[in-house]
Image (cartoon, rainbow, N blue to C red; front, side, top):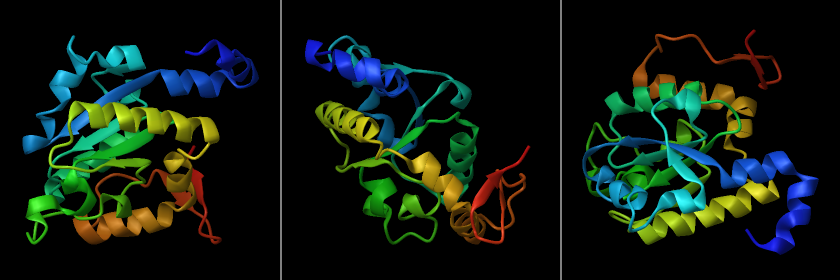
Length: 191
């Protein structure tokens, strides 16, 4: 951290703590995982950027979705996202979550993952190099600092849109809605 940023810490300590303390959970399918292990080993050392891998969604605030997303895995992605505590940030990693990648014409491919959960950032490539992950993280820091990494807020406000898309892809979901839909199409958290 630059000493010139101390005033930022004093003005918004929670925002700065979220920015520099990203606890990541990975949802990896197929080739999507190939570049993640080097990032957390000694050569690249993601912990120096404040990125710490965690075991469960309840401990995570950064969700990396890597590789091919099928209809079957979409359900697990949604459940994982909904179990994370706020504030939470989501990054689509690689071509597949963006547009289906090389599986774009498969009947079972989920294209445009952002129709089902909000995405705060994308890392393009097949597969992106470790350097791209760190560039994305520093960009995410900027978005957090400016209040623009607000996917979890958009999810709550547009829950009806996301839930309808989820049910179009998966059929009737076997878990209750995370938020109640009001008549003005705003979502309200269940108690």
